[in-house]
Length: 162
Image 1 (cartoon, rainbow, N blue to C red):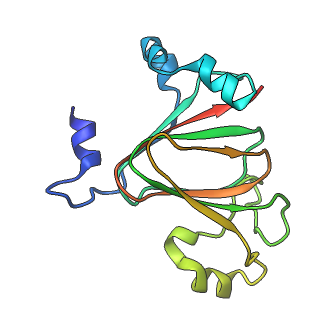
Image 2 (tube, rainbow, N blue to C red; image 1 turned 60 degrees about the vertical axis):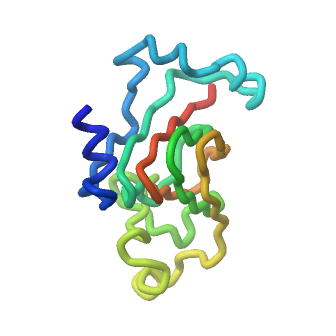
């Protein structure tokens, strides 16, 4: 449809920052749940899901800002590739927003590493990162800071643990 065409871009060029983020698609369209092997996921992860997963759909270049989640979750890449950067739990050097304490004021996607370190000198230098491709999953423990950047048109699901 129209949304998929916009996400794909025009002639291979990325479209504007179009992002369907943290959307409860399975609540809106329950029949889509048949396409997810919840029992297999539960067996592989060893955890039950607290609620239906959220879907994330975006064009290349869309980003989820540096933040941490209040619950353990599993990020599953369905389509495209996504870069994920992780920092250990704790607020030291993460420059949390005053109102949303789980979101950092550090805009790494826009600033880049060097400019971010100049503006936020206490930002931890050590982090882990990976690139998820279709079929890959990443366990994100509660409290771990992370940001996600779609390297190409991307669809991801995240599952919250009970």
